[in-house]
Amino acid sequence: MRLEELERAVLAHGGEFQCVQIRDEGNKKLVPFRHVVTPAVAATELPDVGKLREFYATFGSILFYCDEQSGDAARYLAPVSEWPELHDSFMDWMEPVMDEPDEELLPRWVNTCLVIGETPRSGNYILMPTQGPAAGQVWEFDHDGYEFNCAGNDLVDYVERIMAPTGSRLTDFASSMRFITGDPMVQWWIEELLDNRGGAVSTKA
Image (cartoon, rainbow, N blue to C red; front, side, top):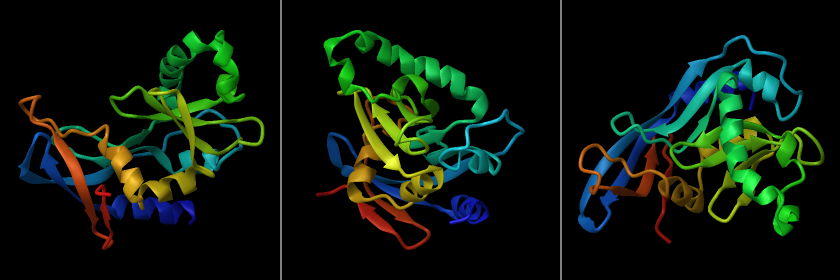
């Protein structure tokens, strides 16, 4: 998909989550979602990997599956201006294990990757290696277990996959979204995603 087509697809895509209250499954509600996009801005020269330059010439940032009432969202591709702060936060997780015997379990590209986004409010990050065989791919870091998972061959592929999640991917999104709007004890679990393209995805096994 070309970047112009991807931009139109992201802006047009919306829908709702069918949710059940955690610890009170008889209580259900619908949570509308959309993707929040900011316009591209002039940026410093970016590495020519993973369609990074083309992507950030089209988008400034994207907040995926945003619920405006609670502020929850599934993923955030950040503007270039926020990358240094995200990198520092990511490296805070890396520093304790850099000198440990298990250091070889970390990808070789950890010290040179770009930190281009995050799972909001989670301590998990979206990474792009700039060197080696993985250069240009999009990876996600989950601090629970220090897991690194390849989530896209490039940024366009990554976004296309986010907008067409599998059941397991939706479950992953749901694990960091609780849609709290008042009482912090009232939290919600996504059971199903219904979008305006006719898609229906469930977190139920």
